[in-house]
Image (tube, rainbow, N blue to C red):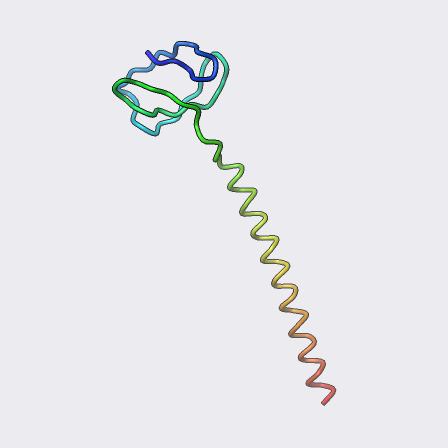
Length: 86
């Protein structure tokens, strides 16, 4: 038996079915929890690094790359224009 660190609800978890680092949610408050130790079974709030945040970062990186590509294209066009003028 473990206790939710957020709402102090007792959570029934078989310590043989979980490993350190496993994540689960509290049936009472819905908090994301992580198994900190198995024996004795201890739970803590899970880190907030979920996949949605990683996806947001990837999209931001792609936008930055697109802007860099646009800048490179403009520089190439300017060089081509200079070559034609000479």
